Image (cartoon, rainbow, N blue to C red; front, top):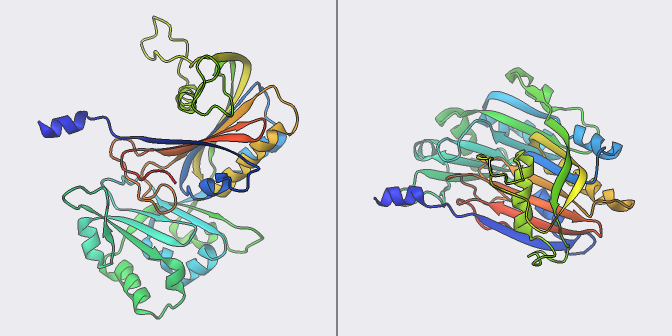
Length: 363
């Protein structure tokens, strides 16, 4: 009966909402974007807009490329050549593909050079590496987290520490995974991921882009200074987030009596806009590209616009071992970790960060 009760429990979710201004010295917007490493989907909504500007459309089309490598040995990510070519000369991101964080072994490479392994008990013991029990394991520890600092390892390739890690990945417990890879760097570099991993049949991929417009869309009325909303005058940040989810899911917002799929309707007060532009980008999207999109959306209001605000939403991979920074991430019943910016025409913004049951509070 206790197990049945736990299955029926609604899992804990955390939503953190804050407001600031992009011009403030202590604004956290850049840091929050840069430390949310593994992004699966980026979407934005612009009310009172029927055509996307050339600058914004170019940025949307330039969010790639990223790469897919099948059966890549894990030891390839700790070689001196890989560290010197990619980790030290830009921001390198990697994430195991088609692995379930609560069941399988998963690996992530962060741009600070940390290699994070989430391993089941048997694999962890076979590797012989030092780690810690997952904080979401429960009474019986079945998952372990191993963190390897590639920058530190590369300082002395003759050290016992490097030899132990290399021996573990090459001989004691050789591990292979399908990986998503991305590398952001400045300047013209001769080496590319495609040529570096050519012997493994690497595939270059571009994010999938969906552009659309919605006519006569009912939108919530928002006031930048009223994060919690104002009765009869403005909607709150949580109400807006629910509405955004419904819009990008193509849900009907009319709450008609014969609609048995959705009874949701736009929060009040609301206003009807003639057209709204919706864009969704799906793939393996690095934070640097997202920050460029955010900056361009801020510049959207450099010239007078009918729209009082625009939104930018980012969803992380549900099976990534981390959410923000090196915070451990789990799945349980959802695996969500996401954030949303509401950008107002006076450069104020709302920032909403949400995580699921197996996550720390967003930073």
